[in-house]
Image 1 (cartoon, rainbow, N blue to C red):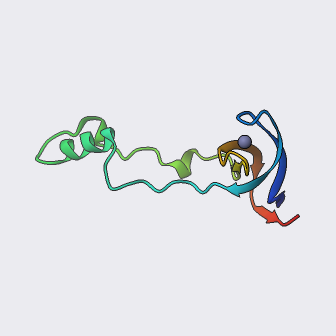
Image 2: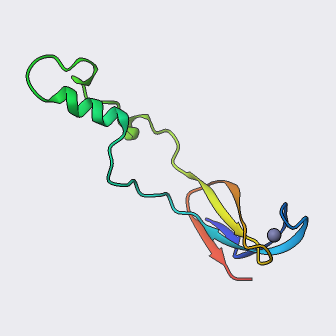
Length: 101
Ligand SMILES: [Zn+2]
């Protein structure tokens, strides 16, 4: 478990000085309704009869390939002066806990 403070004293490139920024953990974005280009091609290939080429086999799933058990932490820092957001990537961690300072 990694404990991350909810405020950090960091440099803001826009203001050109160090300020205490609010820290927020970014959650992975959910995919919108549309299909990707490859998924559209697979859908077209799957209708009708016959060989489906490279789509005849199921793709190798993420669970088969996965060797890492943790995820990298993405943090969003918000500057209180210019309200710009900056990304801070944190090392790998299984669980993240925000602590109040
Ligand atoms: Zn700023």
